[in-house]
Image (cartoon, rainbow, N blue to C red; front, side):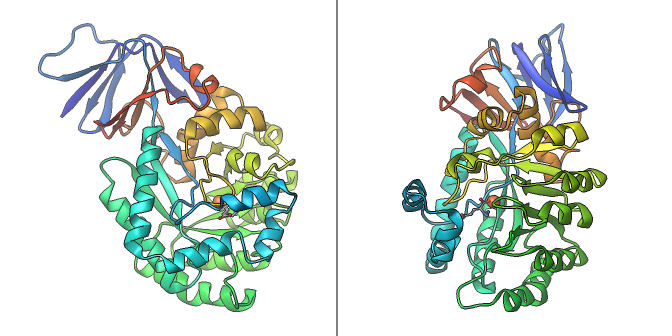
Amino acid sequence: MELIIYKPSQVLTFENGALKVLSDVDIVIKDGKIAQVKKLSVLPKNIKIISAENCVVLPGFVDSHTHLVFKSLRSKEFFMRLDGISYEQILAQGGGILSTVKEVRETDENELYEIARERILSMLKWGTTTVEIKSGYGLSWKHELKMLRVINRLRKDLKDKITVIATFMGAHAIPPNRSLREYTKELIEVMIPQVSKKKLAQFVDVFCEKFVFPPKQAEKILTTAKKYGLIIKIHADEIENSGGTELAGRLGCISAEHLNYATLTGLRLLKKKQVVCVLLPGTTFFLKSRKKPPVQEMRKLGLPIALASDFNPGTCPIYQMPIIITLGCLLYGLSPQEALCAATINGAKALGLNHKIGLISEGYDADLIILNTSNYKELFFQLGTNLIRSVIKQGRVVLSN
Ligand code: NIG
Ligand code: FE
């Protein structure tokens, strides 16, 4: 199986974290991988050719942080927050994550699967070719298992179109009528061993905040996960500073996510282990958070920055990565070059896949987006307009808008 993407106006890739715009190359794809990125003097015969004249080609987006398995969006809370009630107050009243938990527990597996499947196909239309999905709306083994089964079914059924990565996030909130101590014990003694034994997820994540899982409990959960051979991630310092970033550095998480309240000490510890900073501007936007992640310091330290959607029913209804990269620039002060790198190769890094996806380079998977514009800068400016002409997954065109 061979394919040539012929005469694109621009091909975007990265070298040592810097954007490279190639303007006079074609892309040859063989067996699902990028075989050559160079100008072809003669076009070989009997090979499928896609003309990309006046188009931009870039790596497919890697959305490295989502919570997309749920039933309905919690629009009601958006209006409560506009009235001045905080995210934390809503959760304390049994709303927030806990109201999604109630709904997910009452919804049958097939229905959750169908709803999530539609969401993923919508993401594909906006150029996402790899998506991470966290469990965490079950909060009991029965219902976490149901969520993980849904995620793994999606992974298998959609693998020709999009790569789905599973993260176990039983530590997303304390379930009703359980204590922090009791539930942490169950996560450590029952759930994590099962996730590992049954190979239900590759990653484990914890919502580390003083009012959810404080660092002490988060540490117990994450060290257990590591012991069971799972790769660890953490939601750190999103709502307030609680030491989650420091913990991520000390334990050597693959990524630390949110980081709005991260301290310089925390970032220095991340640097020692090259932890990826996964930033989620869609959530900052929807929660009207005044505090932004310390991007300047991250940049100075040379920390890898990824951007992801955080698509979830309460704090971010945005699943379109092109919107996220624009928000990354507008809200966090990323340069467009940094934002593109963050949404592709650095997203791949946050999932341990940077040897395989996120670049247009020989040997990499041919996960590509073709844009209906000759200048990539339009992608940032035309917020809300879908500029994606086609999406290619492992060398096969899987979507044409
Ligand atoms: O990343 N912070 C925790 N989890 C999500 C929100 C989930 C929810 O509110 O349902 C987040 O923002
Ligand atoms: Fe999240």
